[in-house]
Amino acid sequence: MGFALAIIVMVVGLIGTVIPGIPGAPLILAAAVIHKIYFRDASASYFVLVALTLLTVLSLVLDLKITHKQHAIIRQTLLIPINTPT
Image (cartoon, one colour):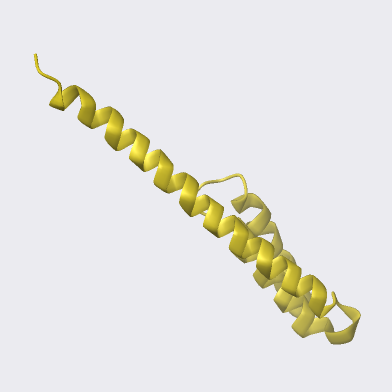
């Protein structure tokens, strides 16, 4: 049961890396944690889980920065024509 759940979450996470709106990296991390809980010592090491956690945090931070820059560019693009004298 735990293995199947980990596989399902992993597949949804992989799909989420290409489809907007589905948090791919956090789901992949969740799948790794589920796998670790299910298989204990036969699973990935704690070092790997820490590395995945750091990569997930990095991914989320970069995603937020890029999204913030995109919104700033869109706001600037939309406001410039409105504020220019005619």
